[in-house]
Length: 298
Ligand SMILES: C[S@@+](CC[C@H](N)C(=O)[O-])C[C@H]1O[C@@H](n2cnc3c(N)ncnc32)[C@H](O)[C@@H]1O
Image 1 (tube, rainbow, N blue to C red):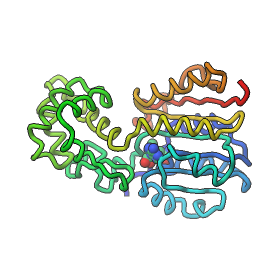
Image 2 (cartoon, rainbow, N blue to C red; image 1 turned 135 degrees about the horizontal axis):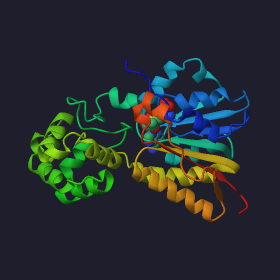
Image 3 (cartoon, helix red, strand yellow; image 1 turned 90 degrees about the horizontal axis):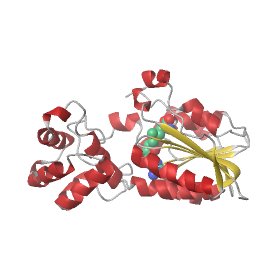
């Protein structure tokens, strides 16, 4: 088995929620359970934690790794898209004291993907990229079905990839030869100018395909809205993002709420990992934590 995901900005994000032992908290992104277990440990038996993940493998992993704790009555674990968190939350309480989102993929999903091809390093895996295997469209379907122009736009908008045009063109020309992660990464390698080859040339294209397959940015927008609605007065919403597209959405949402007086930013700017955390967990390097406190009476 691969190593468990190391939770990012753990102390900072848990502190940001100001957990009350009897409160109701929602972890929208269970992953390997690193943040959830910390929240659970701060709750009394009257407090409740609802943890959500859209990946059944994540849920199965947590239920076996935290076998004892996951049987506690006050830890509810649900497979769902967090954009629907209010539906599941309302079955527990009318309002929540805190919501946490730790966006993207866990390192275990990248390294032990169950043949879903999330990582451009896993050459033999198919181009699938669905976090929730009940979703209908895979990354391979996208490159098959979408015309060159739309692929180009996806790489440009969701990957911020400079060579989107060349990559989309090469994909459509060679579509019958592209089945696995390795087929796509080798093609991108050929298309990229030599000066860019030291920087994981496939990273941005993989990010773009994953965002579209999983409709990640729309889920985030809806998830933020519904999280804010379910919070009680003084409740906290904390979000850890890992790339500029996610962070822009979070930042804009938080600024709107703070300008309208419905919310207050806990930190003037975002919180970033310390040098020490970055050294111990290089995956944390791009993380940004933002927290909003809800006010009912602006
Ligand atoms: C970075 S990991 C979370 C890691 C976790 N905090 C930990 O410490 O182990 C992100 C998780 O969120 C899940 N996820 C991403 N988008 C989601 C969504 N819209 N709804 C539900 N789960 C989602 C992914 O499947 C993944 O397991």
